[in-house]
Length: 301
Image (cartoon, rainbow, N blue to C red; front, side, top):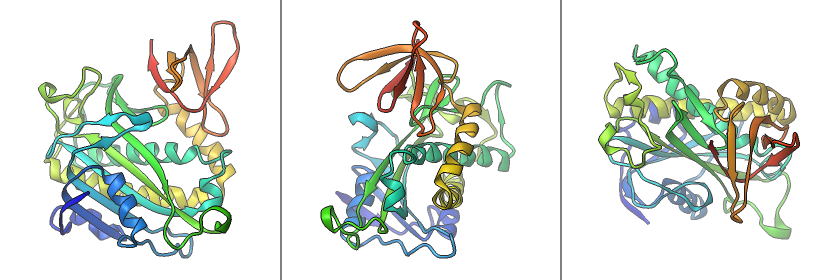
């Protein structure tokens, strides 16, 4: 349920200047849930994309009471220290539902987030505490630093009221993808929710205030989603191959011995050797066989 809706301009001036629509609340259960509700009831609309430029809406909350991750996991955040935002973008239904390419939407969200964080760090002249301190993506939806989770992403498809459903659906219709992004920006070591968590301020010196960080990162994410998704819509297959190459440099799991935990309780252990053309993970077991992992929690051994 939405609580205490308030104007976003004073909180997120840079983001408001580049986004098509910004909604900011003091508290909500989940920014993804709130975005989906507002899209569904028509209170949050996104204009048609024109001349290849996509509309991007932002839903931000100072505090989430029931943040969600993949496979039913909870996302714990703290006000004034963790950024919790969702970015809503209209894309063609044909691409959003095409299993040969739609896995790259999650990878795009991860790459947009890395670009935004690194860009903010550079803008403010901040610097990593250690030379090997760089941001990576743990397939399929976590931001990692030094093997610890700094952020998480959750992508969800929402059908806007103007689109058909079921037999009424038209392949040419647009749908909305809501990208939820939670980032630990200013958590101290004693405030980390789990031993596997980390925060940007623990690895980078010279960062600005939390509010400035949140706004600067969100501004870059709006622009990143707009640019990267427009390219992907124009040429999904070509962009998939480019993204696959780009992921080689930032895929944390690649080359590591990992264990994939599936929702049915089974596990698979092997070396993560890369991504397939559809963005699924390739896991090579000890017998030399390659396995495709599409939905699982992956942890290093």
